[in-house]
Length: 203
Picture 1 (cartoon, rainbow, N blue to C red):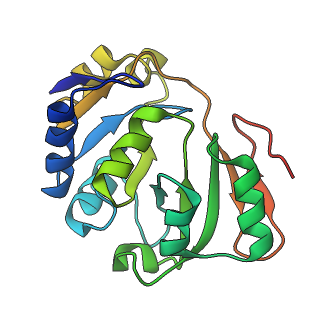
Picture 2 (tube, rainbow, N blue to C red; picture 1 turned 180 degrees about the horizontal axis):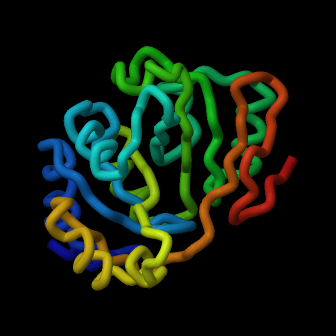
């Protein structure tokens, strides 16, 4: 199912359909401010396990990431120092993933690693979905084979062609980007950029 959404003035009925799908354990593909991503309700373990299987991820070995609609929501699911809070406040929303210590409110699948990546993308579509869901959305970039055309993870119609049978809904928010987020490890008071992607961190 391919659904076209815009930065504003979306049908409330269509948005509610997507929220109901997420609450029922569905999996969606959606735009961010970096690349298209695949995700689900971040507090429901079964769809998270389904996504890990789809991407070949072992949650015991790979950090999982969530999208929140604002920094206050991030603080409900993670533990952070005041300097890290200020760092995020200067840079979010934006193309950054901050690795923080996971709080006990997150499902056990996150606590295996004791850490979680958090994002507040500069993308009004996914941020609105987060706000309406009143919960974080699990996020991970779409898998792309080495010899595959990049359009299969940037063009919504080709994304549907490739992943339409694997997920429950694909949100068309226009052509997506090809550059991943910058990853910043913030598990200690000091922070470390462990992958430079889109966006320059304001330190």
